[in-house]
Image (cartoon, rainbow, N blue to C red; front, side, top):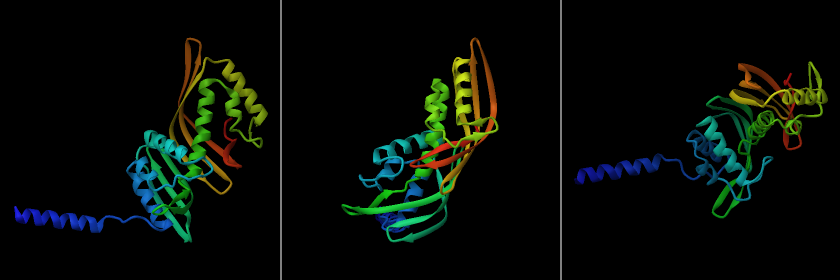
Length: 241
């Protein structure tokens, strides 16, 4: 029994020594975030985030909602850093992220602010990915609800495809929605790349058009969407033809 107790004490001591400590620098916070993303633990991430958190998408509450939605839809997320550079309380670089039916390549900029017991994250938890996913979600909901104005809100005035510009797109979709009894959209695979002022999304989806008693199903529809950054949003700029 004594030997067992000593062995257990030694094991716990070694485990404590090997466990990562509290993050202090923005790079350490970045790697801590990667661990919680891999564990699909929104609560663990929010423990690293200050109540004053704010990014282009919203505050701490919106971040929590987005994280829970991400884990529900895409499961654990594997985050890999290609390059990280620290400058004071800011860490910048590029990242690759992979989940169930989701890949993302884009910028990383994590900022810390003073907290009550040390630094906490003030901004930078995957805002670009969340903005693009929000645009794609609004596109899906617009088609499913038949409210074309909802789609128009996330389409740039610079939109252009082989059929024309934004006005032609809205007119065409309004006609398609009026001629149907609703649509269903299921995103099966998303490959998103974000640059400084633009983004692209290669999308595989299931599209169902209901036309009275019948329905038309596109099992493996593929799209390459282009998006442009406008203010605090990414809006669709091409690819819906």
